Image (cartoon, rainbow, N blue to C red):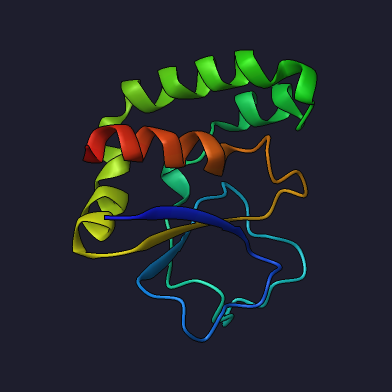
Length: 118
């Protein structure tokens, strides 16, 4: 069971194993609806609009964002089920649209999933 993350704007490697799931609340700009960059969109696992707007991808708010997002996940554990099921079947790539590759919801979500899968 392996969970990784990748920006939606990166080409999908032809040899990448497993399932790719978009974990953004909103559809990524410039990506066609019939895109093959991911297999499924699970928007309910993304941070709430309120949290997303508050964070604004500000690295200074990163620690507090992680805490708040983990609290949202804990309050809605059923939202994780499609991701956990995919990860249990094989490799899972969480796809996200943020420019910042270190401070985004997919980083937190990957860590939460890895904690639950061990």
